[in-house]
Length: 90
Image: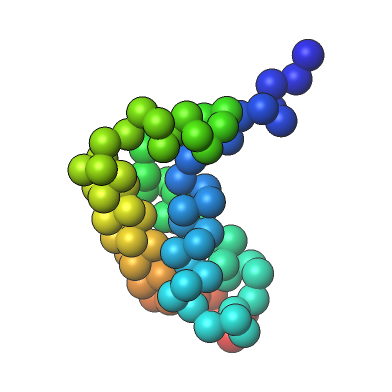
């Protein structure tokens, strides 16, 4: 029995949406993935089975805090990746 298909980190979708909202569409997928990984590594994991699980159990203040954390983590990740570009990637 595999449980991998039934669970996911709640932050993954939020981070992806924030990255796509901030960066132009011409970014390469490798850079976007690097930014996502750095951002996700700075957020606590919150595993869910269904999106409704989070919506039902979170207060408006908690939801606001999560979105604030995601914005900050993505900002920091964009800066980190930009400042650590490999010479051979340019």
